[in-house]
Image (cartoon, rainbow, N blue to C red; front, side):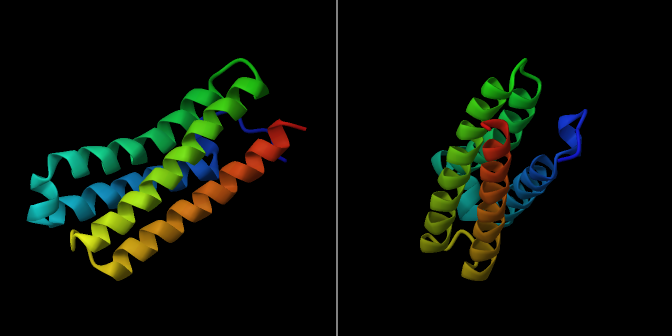
Length: 121
């Protein structure tokens, strides 16, 4: 694995950042989703948690600490996926878009798992 010197260079962080942007954009497109403060706050907070925990863990002093923050980021991926089911159920976004975003969260989760495996060797 190539040595990365900044969290911004991590593919999983870049993908998480993109996921956040798309979630914010989709929620703002639907008036009902925008007005549902609890839903909006939950999905946006979970999405932001993915990218921020990757960044914060990277800046920690050890691989063990980084892996622990990646645990949190991976859990947030699951939360985002769950909320995307709810977004579809409540018609806050089209099913096709929710599926696309869920697939993105799954890919991020897989990337996190791969990095965790490397860090925990």
